[in-house]
Length: 456
Image (cartoon, rainbow, N blue to C red):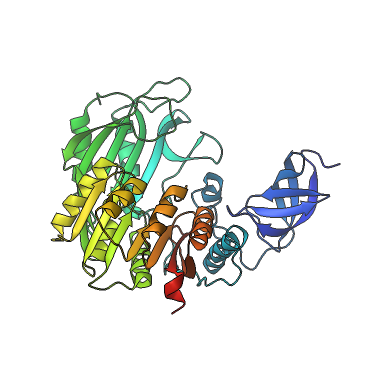
């Protein structure tokens, strides 16, 4: 009988989709952090349920050739880089396997047109956005990241996957908050002022935005803070305050106020300029987002007669990337501020062949169908929960030639592809793209072609 705290020898035989090692012993499946297939380990049993258990590596008996031994363990303990213990080529292969497995198990596809994962030349320091908790650690205001499955902050200065200038701004802001004796948030007591620091940085422009997330409006000696921050970082063009007085895990509250500079920063994506506001969605890895969107454009093979629907259009990054090559783009987004941003971004880039609607994707499809809009290509980039069944049916019913599916969750993508296949579409190619190196997340672009066209 296996019990908690037992130390047993096991071999890691697989990885979960989140990158945990899988070991099998006496009818139990154990999940182990920082363990790779092929490794033999002495495992300490942490927890045992009916058929599954959790363990940790007590010591390694053999090591995988795919192990990256240079990773700082803090990045694994916080989940900042939960695949950081794998070599980068192994990470890319793991991500392709996730896509293949999902399409096989969920969509029932075996003859799979899945390409090798597109990766980065330098797969660290790529994030253009950070959200960092501020807490008291050892009696001192500090910044860092939560230990996995807890609300204990581990102090960190080098976040490994963030742009170094973001890390520098966080550390400098932390030092100034200490100097001004501003009180960090205490989750248990519901006291203190500063909850989090959020930083955005333009990949090409280098413009910085800092958001101070506070529990109440007044910040003591804020002018002194702004003066020091802007002197140290001349490219800090926007400082905002966000007030979050709720007992919640959500980082941002609803209320923003401008403390210094402008409301937005500007950056470039595939040759178009975009205004990025504090709450707007913008891919955190600009270099790979450009490859992701370019893949979607290439897959769609659009020309000057094409009409494109951009469902889940956000601030317009995808649709405006298509617009210069097609007759018209129709975008739909449920968040009013994002629709306003997309209209501004279209104007900023001199693009007039776009129409944006604030509505659900399903309602917009029905409205456009009534108006006689006949899309040749529908591009979808849904949130992690994927598409609704009603949207899949509505989009298939207008019979576009192609549906280009950009996914941040390959399990829901596979589920939606299964339904599209039942409605007369065939999956012709899939390109995994690594937007989040060192983590288990994978994006993919899939092309579905109407069956009566793919047979030609």
